[in-house]
Length: 277
Image 1 (cartoon, rainbow, N blue to C red):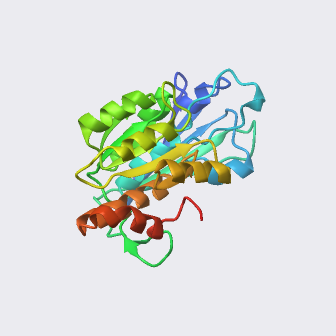
Image 2 (tube, rainbow, N blue to C red):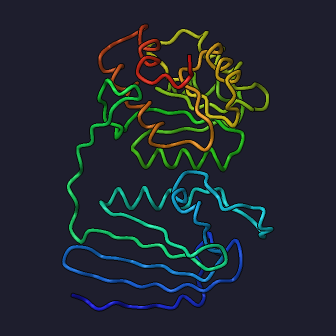
Image 3 (cartoon, rainbow, N blue to C red):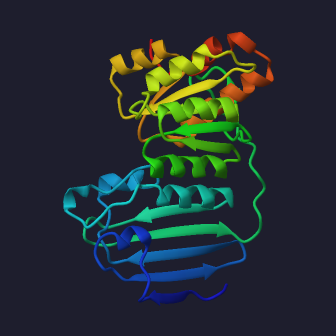
């Protein structure tokens, strides 16, 4: 077994730690015949116990009420988690609490791991589809450009072709030019809100079924009903669960492959009734 190396990163800080105090970090690496393990430990802001299970979720952030200098978008650890998983590895977070620093442990196999064949149940538990589908054309629409670019990057990592737009009218133009398989559409958009953009998209004749997903901070039942009336297939509340989004894409792809045509939208609702009753 190879020795463990400890490297003090006196001039370096983890990006998330750099937003807060001035912590120093320690990197430890351990190499064996089966895997390589990296420990990154800092003396920074730390992580509250209730946040530890959620630190790798998209857009999750430590409570900003701590009056820190600045906060990130909450995407860095999600990207780390996804990239490590793609290489057959794992990543874990540890902390003794706020103000007591944190430690992240990345474990990677030393030999390429075989690609897993993952079969996931659909949202009603009756149909099986793989949530690892890639290769769809997806349009992400959000007036927060950083959020749009971050989600687009995560979807590109999954193998999709992604374009972005930042207002409702630009979304309509991009739908015409890009001809996407799916549109992830924010509701609170400038120039044209997401509801009206969805109605206009549905009113245009199309040669293939289009999946419309509302991704918004509005999560009340009346908002879900508005989304359904506007023509959305699904209504998801931020922060998005990327696995759920991938599952919706997979169900849509499966229906397209079966040539469901005009009946695909009703069937998608049966597979994944995220819009409620």
